[in-house]
Image 1: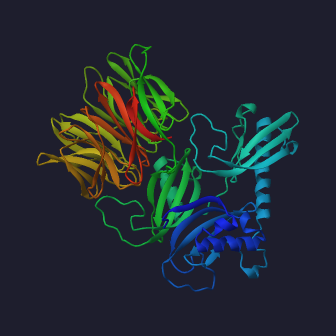
Image 2 (image 1 turned 30 degrees about the vertical axis):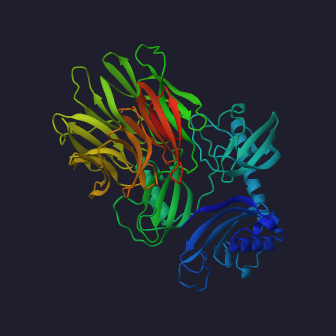
Image 3 (image 1 turned 180 degrees about the vertical axis):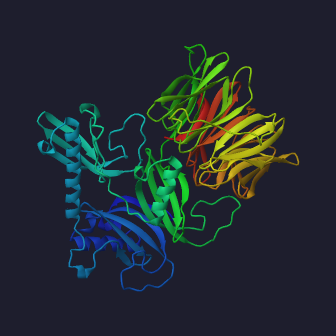
Length: 616
């Protein structure tokens, strides 16, 4: 539906308005006339190219009939006098204002002043209730001393708390100063019911039984209800623990709903549907649906395209405990500033957003301990064993998995899954009866729904898939090397005629497409929503970092001269790829900023290992 965001947050002047598309100029003029203001007082918040299903432009009126033809145009959001107004247009000068009362209603078409006044009253009342509960006084003893509109830079509302993640989007709201008998207090709010003390340490915590005002609900419907039910089952939550953030009508470009899989065929026609965003456990999740469909498709944890990119990595330190010599650090991908996350470890695993961690520590010459570390920094012990390997977390942080070698005397690998790793005592030992009796464990890979892994009987690989509902399945004689987010497709490699074949594999269907045939593949990583992967490919001149499209086209990003082996990693939405390797026995990480035109910029980081590129 959306071809591209053309303009965002631009104040319109009479001269500049002439440079806008004609239908957008018409919308600006219409709103200015309705409100009795100059066009220069109207701000264009956003413009999206849209193809409407019919000539109603996505805003049909009762009793009217419209030509049933696809109609290209724009969705335009305008801001004026404190109100936000949605216009739909075609490519000419036909426009329609969404939500405008019918003339026979006898109402003023728009009254943004009333809307703004209601928002102010609600925000002040929410803040008064909050401070009254914290101080144990009546809300009648709290007075509003000052109030101003604010556009907060994120969902933190200007008050970021350690260990918490926030929606990285401009969030309108208010800054308030409240007065009580003992002083002045600052509060920050959004427009939905979220309030925060501007200086958290200044006030006591809220009572445990305090009920905050419910956020303004998003418009829902059958698809949103189905999405809420599905997410509740995935996360083992009650329905009322999930908030509907938004429900947006969209036109998907094909029957894939914007989530194509390699080798699959889809209806090449616009498909009307919805994009649904839910919030639970301080994460946002995306669902997609087609109109009149009986089900929704889970699109996973939501990562905004402008999410900040960071690196998780280990750096060598003095082993104060005599066993562990690495600190886990978080590195800002832009400034390269480092912050220690946890000290003295020997290995780790992380979710794509870096909020959930598995941390391995050596406890003795013949023992290791594995623990879960949550967003708040709290550490939950999971297991003790001779050693752990192949540690992994499901993308939503809801499940952990690892291979354990029980003891020095018994090193038979045991595969364990831990639902809700922050709650100890609920580990599941996977029955490996279908696995060859003598095997070596390989890498573990979580998809949104399943655990995939490879084992080796000598040089012979065998791939398996495990789910809670179906248990263990034997997939075949190949290696699983990665997963394509938002899809069912695993990335696999197999040997054919002395070459390595990189292919996509859907468990229900088998191999669906060959992506590349190369001498050897050392590692692969796939971003969300893109039709390409990055891979380290071996060749006569040494390993090379390549971008490989699903259609089989390859682009060389860098020759890793002097390296023997390299590990590829990529940020969740594909802005930055990393190649980690050793050069002259010194650790090195090349960061590739991937441009839309295929051009890359390279930066080099040293003295770090075990790199994971995350959306911070």
